[in-house]
Length: 319
Image (tube, rainbow, N blue to C red; front, side):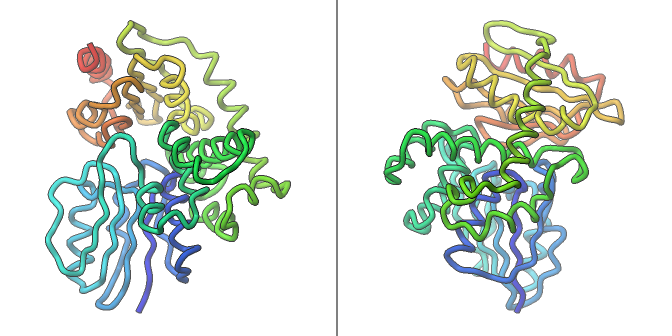
């Protein structure tokens, strides 16, 4: 029997898996990648009797891979909050899926484990920019405001680390970062130990955000704004967290962070207004390679000649 842990390389995926494996450790094969690398089940060569855990990747984007794994006779535990599409009916498939805008995979795992490693769920929720959900969850931890801020920072930094066009853009490969944080049942211990890995994430985030914050919007209205970032590693790393930062600053406005790609097309991150956390995935699914969830979504390869169309549709969607 073999175990596979398949997870998104962002904060939510990593923080969800840390909770599960602190509860039930498995010497599993780790299948992950950059945040936008989500067709992960295609990489699982499972056989009958194997156990496959899938965290924080859309079932809709993994239909064929899931069908192949189930056909092999492996058992699948699938936990996610993205658009799922039609969920297969199979005795080998156990699902915990909730597409609500105010939840994430880390929160779903926290509920499943009855709060056993709640600090990691709080960090994961902050990483997904679910500040209200994270703050509400943290009330059960009885921690100081300073410690809550540290958990928010950690979630943001882990999430930031997952963005890039390839693993070479990242400070840490997501599977490596997961292994670094796994020994800490309490994320505050990882932060407060003078850990050079935490410091590397923090310094990288601060430097890249400084670069992003000098960028002026390409288009800006009361309803939406679009920022275009250059084809540079720092821009690819910061694209998602910059969108979250803009969403927090301008809570009634939708945001698109558009990053130039080497092929001449664009990588797009969309954030719905925090005052109306709906519609992002519907917008992005209008374009090939688009997907995500209600509050936050993206397009992996927006053709250059459709940039104007995207900008117009973003404005229309939130007018």
